[in-house]
Image (cartoon, rainbow, N blue to C red):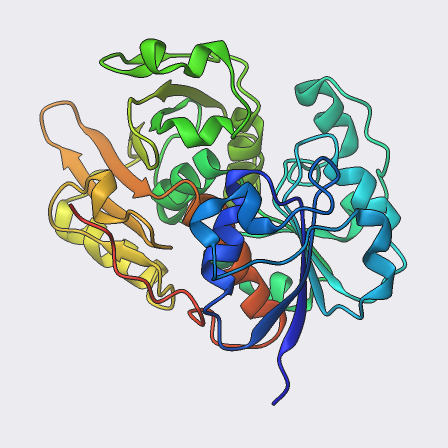
Length: 345
């Protein structure tokens, strides 16, 4: 069987390099083109030297994409830029997996409210599918345009989805507390991410209005069949990659831990990348992989549910999940190219 021809639009960021890192060993694809407007003409390994001798593709402009007969394209572009590329490709036959937030929300109006930017391709919302395979496998399989979820939302939604879907928790409010490594902020240098600011430090940010709040809440609205209310607070960890999310929710009726294990086990029985843990997971337990590890506990003292969910923000939170979506769109085993062992320690 001939390999699928893949394009990666946007090469200079962490997501672009992570896509290449995984795809170079994927049995079903070949990387045909990688684009960069700012580094056009250079080698991919000039931008990311650790790829020397592994991937030395010459970077090309997006304007030259038409000369390639591609089967799928990954948009590894910033929020607000990706929609321009999606609009440009609207009549193309190849499949599109967009790793930005430009098509994740329920409507262009909600996007403009939370991203404070006019959406130039509102028609894309009609065909875009939210790319969380554990929830929307069948829709992804039929999709041409997949909106890859955010890293924080992936960890939060997978952590609580079984209980929201079963109507087992109060959904107003749901308290979500997440901590991420600094790669979640992207590759561009920012004063807030300087070593002196991050090292030996820990802080919250985006209180009350972080854009991932509405992404999480929108999915919970669909799962619950009613309006939910999410209180989401992100924090910055002094580590390079990984997300640990702690979720607090009140059960509607009494529940025990054995029952919780059964509910989660049934819900994720066909989800190869969700691992239900008997002990509290740590970010190194999933480092470099597409796994999401989940621990759930009913606290008898407070009568609250506590769920801990961990992912690698660059893999299950971005590039790995995008490749998982690609596998589903092509009708392949969703684990193809993604059978990595965690890097621990």
